[in-house]
Image: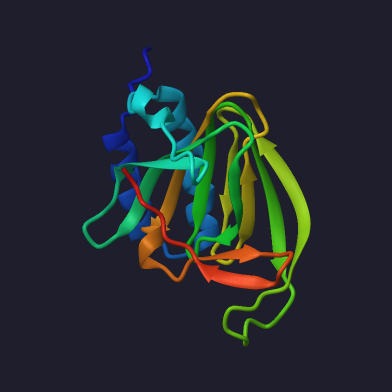
Length: 187
């Protein structure tokens, strides 16, 4: 018996069914994680142009899918060698799967009550590096930063419950206790 190919279109159809069936984030993450890993393993969506990244930012984002209502946002991020992104949240659930290279994720906890605009106190609470095919499941409110500590561009596959530019996503500067808006530009 031959296993049927799992296309990006089939993955998106499965995502739609999952979020239509439940609003429980833990259940969504549990169900989406293995499907995202399967979509990465299939890789029919992978293109050489996805390795391109903005040298000023240190990363690039390639749009694979977004629903008309801005939900179910699927992208591939490229990370230049030695680069990454400071601590940030997503303001939605997220599944990240390694595609090529190693992605180091450090996780943070917010210590203040978020009552002062532009101010945030964070503490690093752990880290996890993901290899190709490995996944990180993050509920809304999770804070992490990403670094590519290798000598070549790495890629990761990202699935979100909402387009990140249509959330209240923030980035943080832990050394200066700053909270800033975080908008991305997807190609």
